[in-house]
Length: 396
Image (cartoon, rainbow, N blue to C red; front, side, top):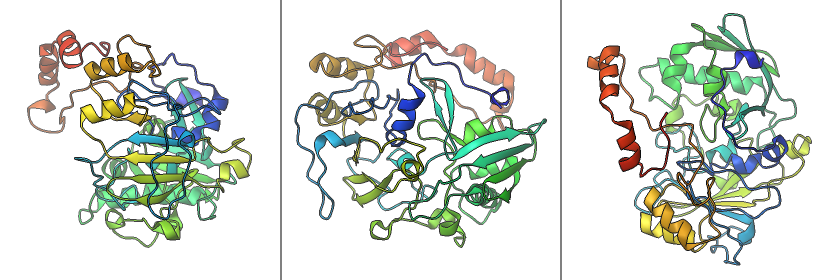
């Protein structure tokens, strides 16, 4: 199977498979920023990650006071992140549907909806999760996926191949219908995929319009918090306009996902994502224990000075994002703050999502590859690295 998976470049960062499985819920929590940090080791306290810098939160700081009706969780069991929002407020409050118009994927969505596969950039490992295996046919026009028996949604409904096929077919339907608001991934999926069919409860087959050898990796594998979110057929089957469905009601258990966490409260200033005690992965023995983090508390992004000071004071564990010059100051002021490269540039691991310049290649001047080459030749990459990125990167 691996010979039919186009893999990303090797990242020299050792994370064991056992640690990855144990902490999948935390890894799925969206705890990453521009330079994407690693999850803490088992039984360790959560470490802060300022995108490229992190701070130990074991200094005895009290956990933020919970909103009404939400249980108190000790600080050492609480991961505090600062992601998303605008001017100190979340703009997507109440959007529990990952495909809703205005929903963002960077505030814990991956803690709720698990992927068929995880990809660990640190160990360059493709790890089966809601799927047990996949296989392409010889010309890469057909992809067969075997889902994992025993996986289930948070409301107890079994997760099956029907959910996989339904999700893909929903994206095809929405992407092809000019009368519907487009949703995440719907346009490209509607162009590439002919249909998804169900062979049995644990087997789904995706048929493409032309060869798509990277589809499993690019769209059905979670690389931090990217990829297609598999949604429950029994919740979405009667919803025509998926983009208009909000899908959030904490009291009734919405949103319904397969991940180890649930949303318990959500305001414009705070989002509480708490561990639930009936995660399928532990019940089936697929994972040995629940994640150590009992609560992920998401706060909306503040100004750079405020964020930096909160990291220095051990009040944040992860945030998006700080400039290189600020990170240098943060690292210098708190010896508990860690980065992948210590106190040296680039103050983070070398990101496999490079800074890029994108073109509309379908029409206009940039449809001519010679024009795109001309633009490329005019860019002084070394100057961009030194001035725009303040030395915090490498040329690719």
